[in-house]
Length: 162
Ligand SMILES: Cc1cc2nc3c(=O)[nH]c(=O)nc-3n(C[C@H](O)[C@H](O)[C@H](O)COP(=O)(O)O)c2cc1C
Image (cartoon, rainbow, N blue to C red; front, side):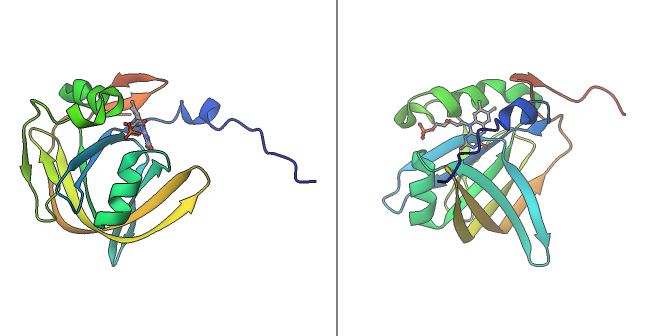
């Protein structure tokens, strides 16, 4: 009989500080979507590849598989409200009053963030209850604003050198 692994990785991962992003995109029908995501990392330099990891149940997962593009927006310390909005507000209302422009892939680029990585989908793979999306960046921008950090279920920013 297969024994279930009951280890709760959240008990450890909550003490790993993450930058906060909003992954945005547009469906083939033209509907915008966005979701708050901390599971984001660079993967390869040549070719350049990044990944985001999104719950199978999130509508963004279906949308990215279908549209094959997404943009990772890096949030600043002032954008905690956007992080909460794109996690908890009803999907159809998330972009109401939010300032953005349309990027090269057609995905929304949020105004006043630290930067963005606009990607076409390289490949995806299901991993347990999440899906890993590997993106091929086609347009990037960043400026040295203070980032929003998520740690132990709270929001922080950088205040000192180690
Ligand atoms: C700080 C923070 C980080 C999050 N990181 C992720 C993540 O990396 N992947 C993910 O699938 N959901 C993450 N979530 C949860 C989703 O943002 C949330 O469940 C989602 O917006 C629900 O979207 P849906 O209504 O389309 O399912 C995070 C939420 C917060 C507040």
